[in-house]
Image 1 (cartoon, rainbow, N blue to C red):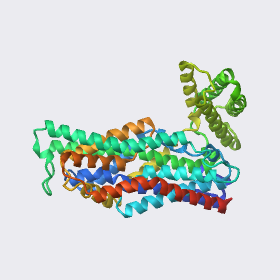
Image 2: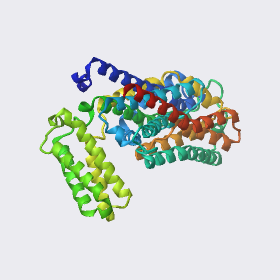
Image 3: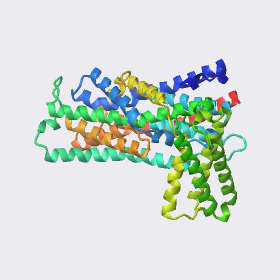
Image 4: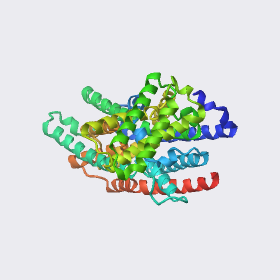
Length: 470
């Protein structure tokens, strides 16, 4: 954390840095009470836990989930941005990007929370990132839409689209199976007012609540990690452009990966990609130069650390473009070797310090314990026309926990809000208790409008800040 006190930042730069970090933690705090309320709605409305106990337990599980979820989703979120912005060493562009992302995302999250709408923080953040990318392409010397990773956006968009449909269908099917095979008819009845469920049912409901909360932390917590890393890399590149904890073995392996990728590109590129191949080999040569013979990242001069990161990102993007364009004639075995070497090459830049994980985990966990009631009431009372039963709560949460957990393992962001609320809606249909169409309509509208609305907000913020900051 001593890199946060980098003397070259100056008093003003340090103030801006801590302000941006506070806003990023604020986003994750809002995410906590905005999204995690979905996880506790079922245990509260089935009397499995008192509200206070439920939100504290959920907060703890969210905290733990952040540490066990890896950083695949965080890296995926960051890769949506144009590489040009990620490698820009100008403070104006980096600061405009960060402020636009944060202000657009928090504004929309707070607005939908105030209205009691279970809108998706995943949609919000992704919309903000895409808005910045599109706005950057409107700057002089750019072509509209250039630089945005539309293929990655398509993958993430597909996961955001399919996951609620999957949640709806699987929760409905699971409830139908319970109805078909259970002999405990109390599972399918509205819980007696003020009475807890039977011990076995209660344990199941508490376990599924913990599962959803843990999965939420492992998926949504990474989005906050990605935001914080964007801030640190953009404003304190000398301290955070590369992993300061890398071992001598990691540095040596990175040099070897750069050399191996150089050999593959040099030996396999076609004639039409000659210019791209030359640039790629040049970037890989710089990577070799920066770290050859170093035993620690601290041995790399501060002014070279961000240039090293630039070379890694640009080389990896060029190789990826050549692979997608079919300019490298590789066998399946050679393709796998190249993918493995690219992963090693990015190992020094695709990282997050432990203190960042702690800060995000705390913000998400504490946020879970505050302001949860508005969303809980919507999920628990306003989706279906009847009271939530034990079987409905367990079905929706079991499907949500598994769906979100698998998505985090695959490095894909999904919406806890929409997976769980869709699951509850699916159980209401399977139960034949009916849906409250006004609530379903409002959730659907929030789902449809979030991406375009936040994209517009972040684009406007970005253009404004670029004009002000230069």
